[in-house]
Length: 94
Image 1 (tube, rainbow, N blue to C red):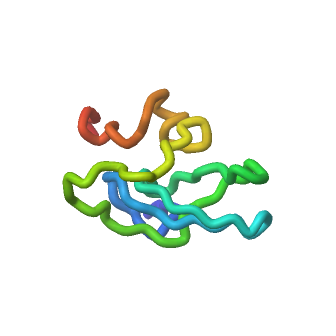
Image 2: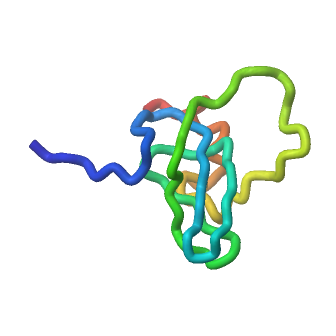
């Protein structure tokens, strides 16, 4: 039996919220667009950082509020699919 390497706490196929920490730069950030076994690059050192905690996105119609825009050039999933990953699960067949 082949065992998959788990790089993130969440192993589902849907989007999750994620908490990130770059130990090299000591930068912390939150993303509402994190995925199983996918990294986001640190804005400081450009290192590939995997979330240390992931949880279900909250439901509601409150919108983005003052949240910064998702940096697509720093997100492994966005880079892989060639577009914003936040809407990807709505259109994907997987």
